[in-house]
Amino acid sequence: MEQRGPAPAVLVTTRQIQNTHTGLDLSVPQYQEIRGKMMSGHVEYHIVVVTRLAAFKSAKHKPEDVVQFMEVKVMMTVVAFKAFFIMDQQIETN
Image (cartoon, rainbow, N blue to C red; front, side, top):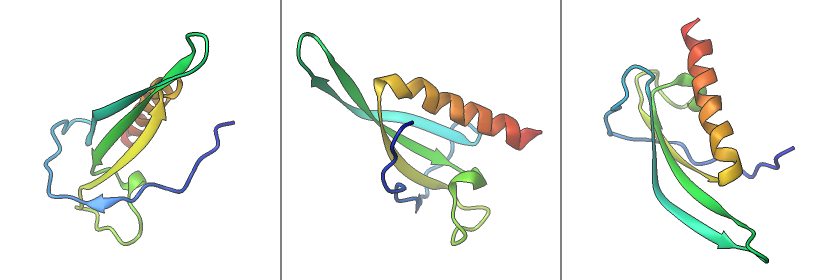
């Protein structure tokens, strides 16, 4: 089971959503390679999320707000992170 830290700060932004079909934009402006012993290690991806989806807003946000936050994920969990957003979008459209 993955241990989670505190929830990321979710801020209202004036950025426009580029992917209007899903209401979710992901970008990776920074990554860091962490080298371990004997050719082991991992890569930490700093993923910036911009979305209008209610699942990522708190009670203080308005329905029309576009919010932005950043998550740091290691390479082994990036695929699961993307799958979570796809699954969430499918649930919202049903």
